[in-house]
Length: 188
Image (cartoon, rainbow, N blue to C red; front, side, top):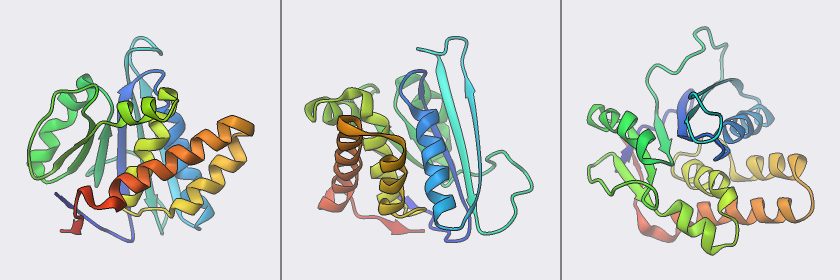
C-alpha cells in the first residue's frame, strides 16, 4: 500500500458508527498537532442516531492558515464499520489510503486498502471501547502526521487512572501493529 506523505498538510477522515469515539479521536489528533505547533481544523457530523448511525470526523493539519475548512483530498481514511467502508471504498480507486477494521467489515483487497482486526485486538486487550485509540495509533504510525508521544500527552491530559493506562496501552498496540512489519509503508 502506498500513502501520500506530505509533511506540510494532512487531510484525514475518520468514519464509523456513533459511539465508537471517532469524533473524540479527531479532536485528540487535532490537539496533538497543536502541541507540535501546527494549525488544525476539526469538523464532525453524525447520522440520524448519535449511537449507531454513521459518524464522521474530518481533520486538517497544516503549517499555514487553513482557508477552506473541509477535507478535499484526504491523505488517509480510517473506517471502523462496513457502512463507513462502503461509503469511502471508492476513494481507494483514486489513490487514497484506507485503513479499515476487518472485524466489522468484509475483507477487501487493493493497493490502497489495508485491513486490520482493530476491534478484535482491542477486545483481546480488554477494552473494545478503546478501538478508536488503537486504530488512531496505527494510523499515525503509518502516516506520521503527529508524533506518537504528542498523542500520548493528549491522552495523559484527558484521562486518569485505568482509563489513561488502557488508552496509552491501546495507542502503543496500534503503533506496534504497524512497526512489527505487517506492512511496508512507502510515500508515493
